Length: 222
Image 1 (tube, rainbow, N blue to C red):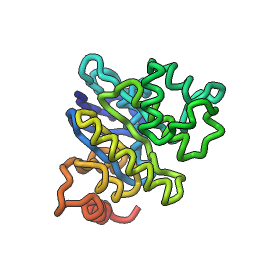
Image 2 (cartoon, rainbow, N blue to C red):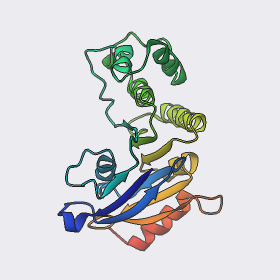
Image 3 (spheres, rainbow, N blue to C red):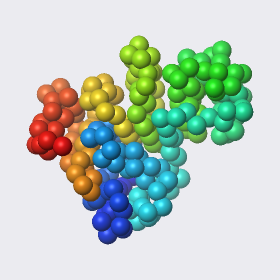
Image 4 (cartoon, one colour):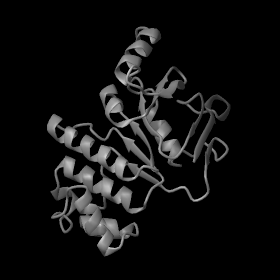
């Protein structure tokens, strides 16, 4: 589905170093690492938003559909939630189904800025799903949400991943507990330039929380 063969030093990239990894259908990856290390930069590269990373470095299967949930909802503020979904190709029937699926069945005809932050993220998630993504990218989806709203969104994403088992996910988060709940694979980015220091499956005996503590200890003080 996706192969990263990033040599950031050779490309003159200011943040990323060597990252060689593959993503397959059904992979549920959480990407952790220190603040500012380049997690969002890597996600933007995968999405094709960083022109310094060429097609030779980001190799995708033909026709790969990518849905990207940014920290900001990035819905068009002058269009209703329903219109935002129609603009990416969803049919009227699909819009109603998707909004129900993310718990916004009654919010289709309101403007995005009339929604709470948690509701706006749900609407943006529905827009991601409207394109029927093969790969879902999530950038700190629980940031700035209160604990109850974060738990609700976490549960929703977990359910959606179960509903679409072939869809791969890469989720940037600062909390290893998100990985233990959502992921079957952990990436850990660290170093200057940033390199992938860890890429392994998560198991009952190798949780993200325990692995992250070990990796932070190995890295030493900032």
